[in-house]
Image 1 (tube, helix red, strand yellow):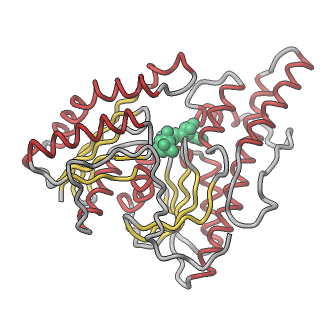
Image 2 (image 1 turned 90 degrees about the horizontal axis):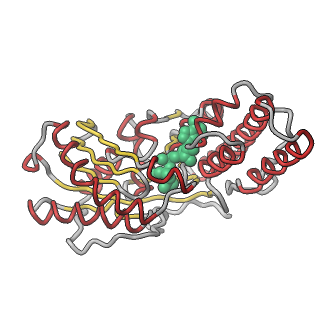
Image 3 (image 1 turned 90 degrees about the vertical axis):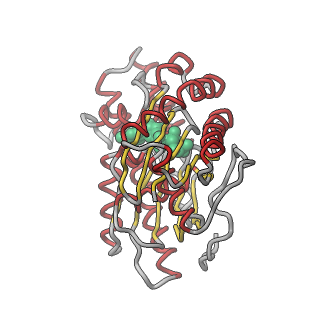
Amino acid sequence: RTLLGIESSCDDTAAAVVRGRSVLSSVVAGQGGLHAAYGGVVPEIAARAHAETLDDVVRRALAEAGCGLADLDGVAVTAGPGLIGGVLAGVMTAKAIAAGTGLPLVGVNHLAGHALTPRLTDDLGYPYLMLLVSGGHCQFLVVHGPDAFDRLGGTIDDAPGEAFDKVARLLGLPQPGGPSVEAAARGGDPARFAFPRPLLDRPGCDLSFSGLKTAVLRERDRLVAAQRGLWRQDRADLCAGFQIAVRDVLAEKARRAIAIYLGSRPSAPALAVAGGVAANGPLRAALFSVADAAGLAFCAPPLALCTDNAAMIAYAGGELMALGRRDALDLAARPRWPLDTGAAPMLGHGR
Ligand code: ATP
Ligand code: FE
């Protein structure tokens, strides 16, 4: 099966052609520059840019794949969750193609796209445990199938990616914050500042990151007041301390998610990660150790497929089509769309 995928839920306009598990093309057009002056993604600007770019991105994806519309078996599109204007732009493009060609249309949950990515890149059977860590989300999921997810826990406030971006902003480092904080942390002493490890005292695998971000702000202000500015070393130490705190919390909660999972099932699945924060070196290393110690395989897709892309949407759409899923031309764009639909077999865990 060959699918065209379309993704426009945040600030990347993306299209891809995927045949089975091979990515024939994956085009991602970022909008970073358009939003730089505003310190965050402006939904109206993003929506307009998607609408202007989508046709061209789709054309490029087809050309790079060496495909025409006649070679496709379906069109998959992110139908949510995300910034509604952008999602609508993508859904309308997909509907236009489906209406014009008669190809089947499949609406895909953006988070399901992230969560299924390890199956695109590795031989991974259902079920498996997934830590989805991105700019806007952080959750532990048991993935039972392309439309069956069981949420074990997640953040009660910020997502880690958001926290990395805020910390970078606080310290005057460039966006996106994850890579610049990771780079700055390389020369830093992670033990200089005692940053909190939020929610470790609470059972289960819920997480919190907003207090951590505030702690970095407090230390920065204290240093600035005491010495009228920040030295390069201060920045490095703040980044290192913050990054290690995020790593420690995610690693410990991953350990608990594995324990909850194994408590209710005998088989040992893999621990997979997806989302932009999964690019973080120290975090990947820590998660690998946690999985390894529990006897699980560790599966981390390459970075280009961890951050937003349309290959994951085309792939997820293919899995859904294989289950017989088709959407009509009245497919709705959904700003909110939780993955845990209750359709999944529930695990025997209490929270
Ligand atoms: P969502 O999927 O939740 O809507 P998103 O698609 O915007 O969010 P992604 O593209 O998956 O998020 O990831 C972007 C985030 O990943 C940014 O917050 C960025 O700072 C973070 N990130 C990227 N590289 C790293 C890194 N090396 N270390 C930590 N964080 C990183
Ligand atoms: Fe995303």
